[in-house]
Length: 216
Length: 113
Image (cartoon, rainbow over the protein chains, first blue to last red):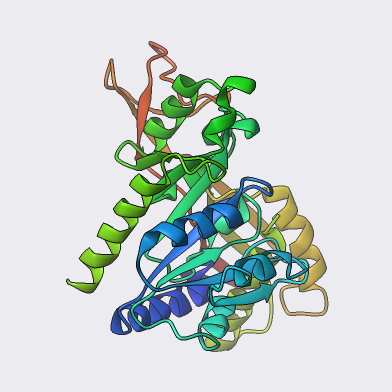
């Protein structure tokens, strides 16, 4: 006998994600799911952003193992929760649900640093307000073509380490061609977490998104 | 890379449907995967064989359909699917824009007895 199912395989995850989104709206918090390769500069970018943000901020650090990044974040006096996946290649909504119980997030911007990986985290809704794709110029201009899912789903894109652009083979036109094909309206921010270029502009954009949400 | 957890979710959903309908064995599972899901179908088949052992879905045939996203050419306006890993229009080679994203993984139907 044939039975019609017509169900999204990720429905169990998506159900928890919807609950998180509702809860964060009540608590007037905004959550950003930051997705990039290992070494894209996610942790430094988060710290630099919080330095200019002028809004309460907390961090959820996702890694397969270790607490290296969360110790670095904590050393700046930023509240942080570590989530270790123990081998898993992405954070899911259940992990975030548990992490959110460990930290006060009222009126805060929550930065979730996902496991360093451009593929798997793109598939999982964790209840975020938007996904942020971050890549850096030494990784090459071909990232949108090789990992289209995250560039298509991103609510914002950050191109990090632009201070290195004259030292590496990075073609802006090719990069933007890929981005605009997949996600024509997305905002792209070119930044350097080392010298601070572009961080102020990105921080202002983020703050405006946050204010818009809590004043809605 | 996340095919193991995806396959585990597929198996959970299938066994849940089987129990709800009161049948004993899964014969066939029909799935659709979007090209932007980042899923490798061979890995799903491999993990399914491992995870379904000693369950009522053991030995079931897994049919995986592949759905491709669609782009609209900015120049000649045709709708096309990406081919040979290029996002460019296959006719005039201009840049296109994504108009239909296929990033989901769905179970369409199961056959049971």
